[in-house]
Image (cartoon, rainbow, N blue to C red):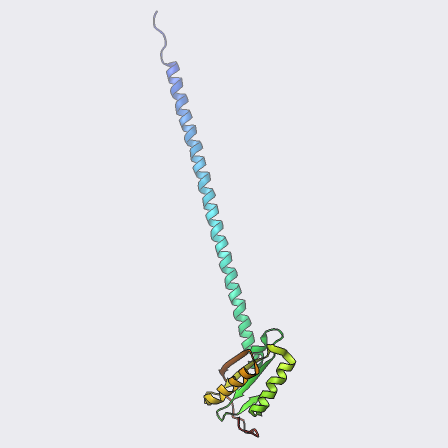
Length: 175
């Protein structure tokens, strides 16, 4: 007699501790897995957002390039007149220092009248584009710039004129 069954309560406690530890590890594993998934999704969302922003920026640059190409395609007279309400006068200077507007050869005084008339119609928003032949004397181009400055033209643009035949017509006065 004196023999009692031993260890049932100790074994039960061990099983409970092992089950509790396993349950804790399972909960901890699910928590880590959930946090990992959260940060992964968040990271992917940020990457998608950056890709969308980059695509929108690229589309904006493409639209700007298309608009610029369209303005260039329309020709020199429309290029500077692209802004709303702005009148544009294209003055060509050939290698013989002849000045012309819309193919009509003008003297310096006639050009002054043309610019003044455009300012009367368009106000201060008149712009002048000077298209100079490659061989045009610098002095002739500078004279047109000075004239524009004297008349208060705010926008004066210079560019190389496309190769064309020289005008046979000469003005009444020297430029």
